[in-house]
Image (cartoon, rainbow, N blue to C red; front, top):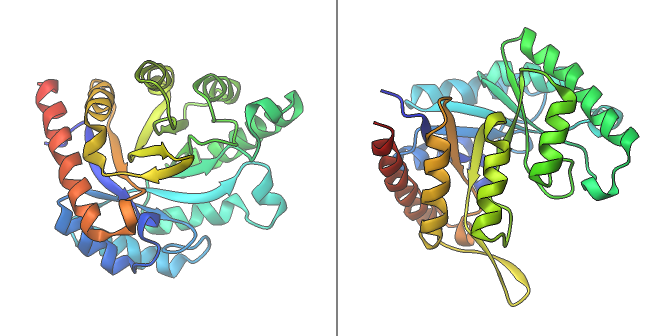
Length: 265
């Protein structure tokens, strides 16, 4: 039986590896799914590669969780990346969802016209994707209109389309209370989550073993797993870009998901 939250990886975690190497690594790790990135592994518009990678993923017993595109509302169309090309690639890949970016401005730097443009563009592509049976979800990220839970919810409410969702990732250096509030705010709109453990050390952002974030992540994953809709928890930002460290993080994530799964029953 499928758990409400399944495990996977964001393929751009290992840009240096080929799709076949990533598939083998994910199988070795015992994870279930891959979000394929649109910059290296499944380039936008390369339908032959998309079909091949999608088929190889499924042949290996894995799921295509999503297509991690680099489509930015408003900006991409102006610079030559049409959403139609992104959607065609996702369909060739067999991805049920396309991850997009909510522009390139922090909420504090965006005026009302910019917000309206992002919402209008998202509505346009959401309708195209819906007709093709594919969902849309925003990357939850600084320097976009989904930088904060408040701005994310405001944008989703402005779009007001049942085919538009959001990812979530832990805000850097947030307190436990801030982290919980962030996830609670977007949970009704949640598609998938990106899982990693980062810390500010000596003024720099440093990757750390996932196991060090045990208490925060068990709480977060429990919150997600109590939601009635299915989600993927997708690993990224591995210490040293090392496959060995990825295998350790994957074992940690699997253990945590098994724990939260037992709580669902």
